Length: 194
Image (cartoon, rainbow, N blue to C red):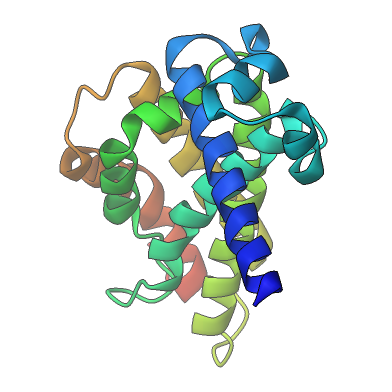
């Protein structure tokens, strides 16, 4: 019983700290935020904070991992066309949580977010492609390269969309992505020649 109570407290503390950092990111740049700001916003003491995190970078890393975990869900749940990046679901998700994404990518955190996103997304895409095409002959381009390309193309378009304050709907962005990135990918993977 005591362990369960501690787990609940720990989850609550982590939630308070992460929420505090996210709220602060909506107000000011990451570089201007101190651990003291996080403590004050979360309403906890420094010993409680340091029992759960090393520093503010540790909290930021957890937030980034959670964001990327949310982005990976639509890929693993994609059944419309196996192995295809479900860009519409991703664009919709990002639009629904646009404030959080914008807050995370401002300041020096931006490079870290996109680097981790590229790695995570390309791995997820590669796994989806590998399971889809395991029984077929090998494509002329290695799946790892295809995954890097798709992740990079998607993230580049996504970054532009966020930076320009989302001038197009998720549906339009999906159409653009599908037209730009996918014809060549499917031709390569499925071994078709034009």
